[in-house]
Length: 102
Image 1 (cartoon, rainbow, N blue to C red):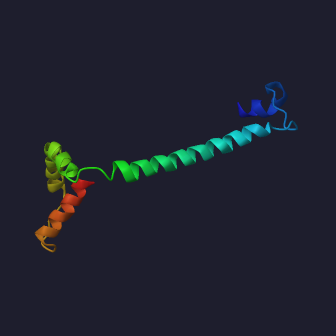
Image 2 (cartoon, rainbow, N blue to C red; image 1 turned 180 degrees about the vertical axis):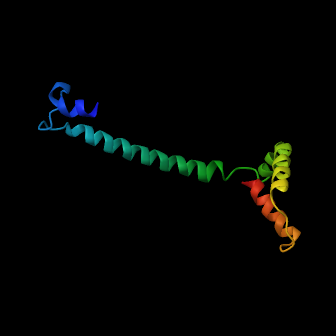
Image 3 (cartoon, rainbow, N blue to C red; image 1 turned 30 degrees about the vertical axis):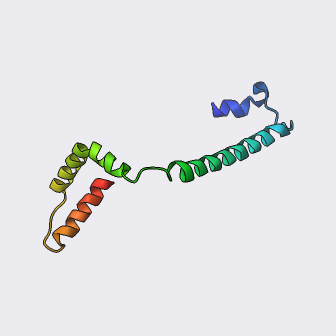
């Protein structure tokens, strides 16, 4: 296919000596600028209005609604992570919950 492209450039209607439409490049540049401005405004709206007004209890509600799944993940990691006598039980539990939280 690539060989056919380079061998039949004239048949495909592409002429490298012909100038490219200058407006196409400007449209792409303006489109990318517009998307950048839109994404910045969207980020501002999400970051400073929606997330600012979330309830502090939302995390607790989410964890409570997924309590069974979180418990199953903790049980799985409890079986697969080796317990040792070097670290305290609290440190090992902290590491275990870090794995569950990921």
